[in-house]
Length: 213
Ligand code: SAH
Image 1 (cartoon, rainbow, N blue to C red):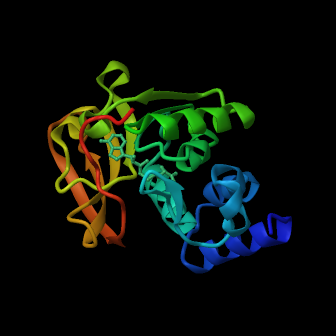
Image 2: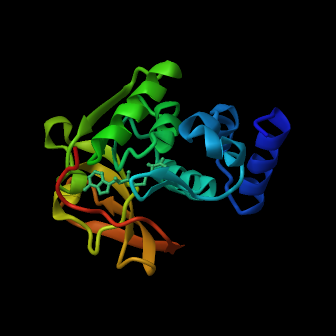
């Protein structure tokens, strides 16, 4: 089930659904998604679906990972990117192969520890991670050229907007559980103005506050 043919079928499906950026498709083709799942589920790794990763969390659907990554890169190169919600680490691993440096924050410690192990295993040395509440971003390394949030807040946190570099983009699902929209937000130059575009309806786990040990 983890054969090259199975993976190729997934990439084809992503293309049929409208993913056009070849950099994204190429990186997803060569990144083993099965190592981000528990063994009992790894045979389903190349289905285009979200799957449980424990602690009531999920690995995002490949199409959504592809779409968010494509959006993040759609308005020029992004050197330094912040991800909120490391989860199993799959989205961060994809990003790490497309940008210089990835900063990623996760509030559930055991998930973060497992993700770090996978980054090591894949030799991804440009991912810096922290166990923290990402709803307030990660001020220490700000500003970021891009920020991706993989859990949905009820509204866009001001802290994330404040940590965007000039012309930086924020890709974020926003709204109550079961009724969220994916937004692409771009800071206009070095101003405090933001251009906002609604991309599509999505389903994400909620962005929670505080940390879990
Ligand atoms: N990026 C993951 C998706 C994980 S699901 C992937 O590639 O599949 C979203 C993750 O966001 C969960 O692991 C959840 O624990 C985490 N999360 C939710 N609220 C958070 C917060 N305030 N700070 C950091 N992580 C958070």
